[in-house]
Length: 222
Image 1: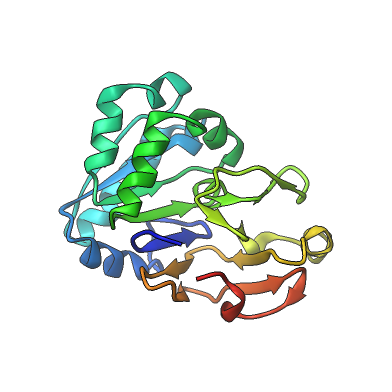
Image 2: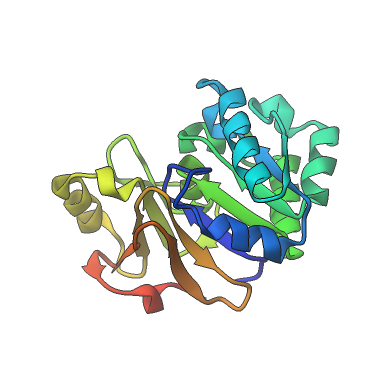
C-alpha cells in the first residue's frame, strides 16, 4: 500500500485531544493545511473550515478551505490544481455518502490520491475517514457499501464511543473474514506512517476486529 502519512479521525476534529495533528503538520513540512469540507456540504461547511483555521493557527499553520461541495466542483480544473499541489489534505464532514457521490471518478479525487501517493499527508474525519475505505460502513444501518477505495481490507467506525453494543455487534456479524474493522472514538485517530505501521493516537484508543473477532493493530494491512 503506497502513500504518505495517513490519519483516520473518529470525530471531534480540530479540538483539544487531537494531539496527532501537530505531528502530522510537522512531518508534512507544509505551511498550510488544505481542508475540503465536502462531507458537511449541507451543514454549514464554512463553520467547519473556521474551526479548522482556529485549530491549526494555534499549531502554527494557515488553513485554506476549498469548497468542493458538489460534483461540478470536483470537475473544476482550478480545484484539481490546488489539491494536487497540497502537502497536507484534510477531508472532513459527517456524510460519507455525499463525499462518495461528489468525489467518485473525478479529477479532484485523482489529484488527492496522487498527492498522497507522492507523500502528502492525508487526514479524513468521520465521513472523510469512512469514504477512504472500501468497503466502508454504511452509517444508515451498519452494513457495508462501496467506498472510494484508497484503503483496501480495512474499514472504520468513527465516533465509536457513541455506538451501542447492539449496533457494533450487527456490523461485526456482517464483517467479511479478511476485513479489518476499526472503531475510532472521537478526538482519536488511527494513524499509518509511510512504512505501513499503524498506531492509535489522541484522546482514546482504537478497537480492532478482524472478520468480526477481536484483534489488534497487527491485523491491519501494511
